[in-house]
Length: 165
Image (spheres, rainbow, N blue to C red):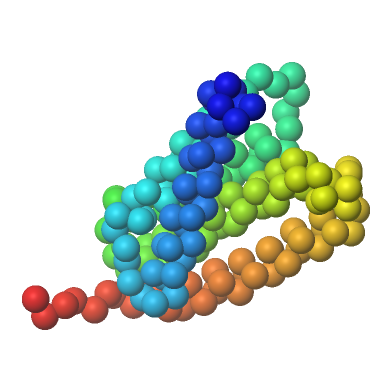
């Protein structure tokens, strides 16, 4: 046990938090029309690992977290193909940015849900996650990500500027 968590839970949470942090750095890169190779690889592979490890927890029925995990892996597959298979050529550059942003949104969506389940003050505000504070937090995140994804697709669409070095 680490911090009261099983090793699997700790690794899953750690991967998720690293993926979210790296994802926000990658998003900054999109918004400034730069590809940050190291951060991109860290984001993509920790996000894949987060989704995969989510399926290792014991479960007795299909849960919303499983749906998010499947959707995340689908958009990550497109992002990975666009990045490594098509090398961001043509429309694949925009496809990569959009799918990477969707994957980051899924991570943030789950983070908000986990915060409302685990943080006592938030749990008191929305004990069943059907109350207004939870819905408002998720709606605010969704709106922010729609706007940021549109901006990322616009700003990251052109071919990167090559340095004179």
